[in-house]
Every structure is written in structure tokens, then in C-alpha cells.
Length: 347
Image (cartoon, rainbow, N blue to C red; front, side, top):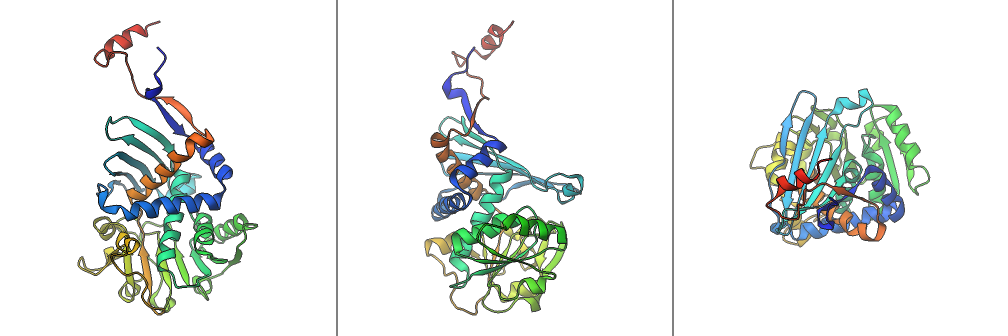
């Protein structure tokens, strides 16, 4: 039996995703993703929201991240296993799905290892566009792993950053990042210490992988007037900033019930004042209010950002044709006769 068109689900493979990036262009794609994410933040109140469903182990975490805007449902499966790199494996892998709420039928299945890196970078830069000091042109990139190039180029594409100062405890990671960023229009400066990396930087991005309470930035490293993107702390027991920095900063988060468990603010009292990003983006709450203010985006990643990325991806498929049709759903001629369909398939 040949499956009907309505039962075929578009699937975007890793190869398709890479082709799509080169077809659209990396920086235009980052800008497009940022626009979709910002648009969904503006309609934040429409979405179903819940902390991600996490299964923790000594080696890492496996998570499901669901949401819906009432018309489309989406989820992402993602893992985080810091020790994977020692085995030649990715720390993070992911895939995601969109479905039609009216029928429950999936309408898109996609790899999201690459797409998550893109959406994370686009979110960071979209937030920095709202919170970073005016005229910011230099970013310190502390942690030069798989996210670092995407973060750097998103800041260039969306915030007009022209200089990136790199530091990683592993000098080979810094060399890799510098090599990959060559020829992309950024002034790239490898640094020997985190203190050197933050010199002259108005945006400080931390993105490290160790699953522990770490102090990547100490209090005396952070001066007035900077914007911090803390994106490495994304599960219980994993942080990057000294608590004193948090007490000096105005803190902005995605979804408080999730961030208070997983983010930098797990180090603070449960009633410590924070601001939800959607309120800044809609104008309901202030963002940066002075040149001396320290703004902190305590980023843990939220399902609506993945939903936005999948929505952006779905809108590119008709034009590009970069997908396979998967025979994923059983679709008998008579919806009540699933058994009969199986019987008729006998050789």
C-alpha cells in the first residue's frame, strides 16, 4: 500500500540542515531565527509552558522540552553528557518535532543538534540586542567548545560585534575556534587567561560544559556597564558565576520555574528579584536603564525557542526542498481497519 500524502512527514536530516545553512547563509539564518524567536517571545502568554522533563544520571541528562501555541505543538529531545567528548562523541545531541494540534499529526521531524546551536546563539544575540550597552562591539567568549563559533557569529550578525576575545582552559579548543572563525569578518584574539579575555569587552559570554558548581567569572573580573550571557549553567548543580556577581546584576530569565532550578540563580534565594525576558521584549518591563548597569541573561534554554526554530525551519522547506518524506504514520483507507491494512501487506 502506498502511503497517502497526508501520512508522509517531512524529515530534515543533518545533511539537509548543513545544506540549508549554506543555501540561506549562516548569518542571514541566524538573523531569521532571532526574528522568529523574538516574535514568539512577544506572544509568550499564548504558549503552554512547563519546565523540561529531565532524567538525570551520573553521566549527564536526557530531557524532553514540550510547548504549544494552541495551533501547533512542538517538542525537542536533547541530551547533555559532558564526558562524551573524551569518547569522540558530542556533548549535546537533539531532534525535534512539530505537530498539528487539530489532528495530532506530526508535520515536521528534524535533527536539532545543529539547529539547537543556531537557536541558542540567535537567542543570546537577540537578548543582547535588548540588554547590551549601546555601541558594544567586543565580546569575550569564555569556553570555546561546540557553541562558541555560533555565539560569536550571531553577535556579529545581530549586534554588530566586530571583535571576539577567546579563552578556554583547553588551548586546543581556543585554537579550533580561532581557526574556524578566520575569514568570517571578525577580529579574533586568542587569550591565555579569562582575565585577559574580558579586557575591553562589553559583552561577556560564558559557555562551559563541566557539570559542577564552577566559578568561571569571579566578582572582581566583572566591571560596571557590561552585559553577561551565562549560557553554560543549564542543569541543577551546574553554574559558572560567583554569587556576588548575581547580587550586583539585574537578572533576566526565560521561564523562572525552570531557571531557578537549573540556572545561575539556583545559587540565590527563591524570592530574589528577576525579570522575565518576554516582558522586556513587549515593553512591559525595563531592560538596560543605565550605562553602569550590569545586565545578566541567565540562559538555560526554553522550549519556546526550539518551537520558534522548528517553525522557522518549516517555513523554509517548500522553497528549498531540503527534506525527505518519511512514511512515519499508519494511514489505512478505513481509519477503523488498521488490522486489515496489516493483513493486506502480507507477501
